[in-house]
Amino acid sequence: MAVPEDWMGARPQQPIDLHTDRPHAARVYDVLLGGKTNYPADREAAEQTLAALPNAGAIARQNRAFMQRAAHHLAAEAGIRQFLDIGTGIPTSPNLHEIVQESAPQARVVYADNDPIVLAHSRALHTSHPQGRTAYIEADLCRPREILHNPTLRQTLDLSQPVALTLIAVLHWLPADCDPYAVVRELMGEFPAGSFLALTYVTADFEPQALQEVSDNFEAKGSHVNARSKDEVLRFFDGLDLVDPGLTVVHRWRPDAVEVGAAGSDADIPLYAGLGRKS
Image (cartoon, rainbow, N blue to C red):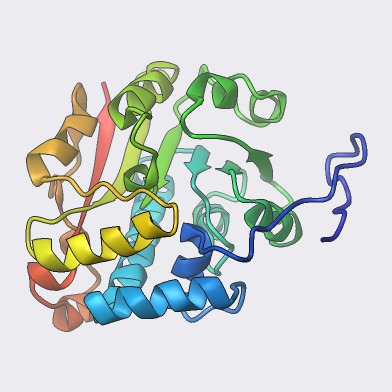
């Protein structure tokens, strides 16, 4: 285990345990995207996921593509200049800050995750455009108050101005004793009118047996997966105005022309996506 340098100039940090003997969602996602920041346990979990859900790689890619489209919309069309991305995952270019700062170089982005390996790679790769800023905080999504009052977040974002909160394929990983609806309410409750919520969430609406097998595989290794129906996912947007086309399967949310031709059926991509504005 390496002792990382402190990127914010604070006190030296303790060695981090990467828990490479068991799979982690961020690293399994990295496998499915064709990345290299993963370990044998992650690759085994990815193989098991692909055995149960052969299109898991396509799901990962479509999820990433939604993030890119939503981020571009927020920066280029909605005028958002502040972003809080929780459940960041291992950096894969183009990252959120690269997309938004292409349209708005002055945009500020805070990444938050609780995985030490994500922390290490984010320090190295999440570098801002000179006119903007990026920051990374180690945080537990089940403790939203700690995220909102993190000094680095407060130094980077002005919470009196609109913020886009992005929760991309993260809420369904929360442990059973953590209420995701309460988490989202608390986070969005801190942001002013004009703020946005973007999220994706896994569903068993189309292939319940395959999703159950995937969930069982992760549960056996200590990770909780909770799929939800469309109506259940819609509850995350209570009090928000959904941006057209509303909540839909991820590959049908404003797809690019090329993606329209490549998209499969809804059952192929069991992931809902939506973007909502706080009025």
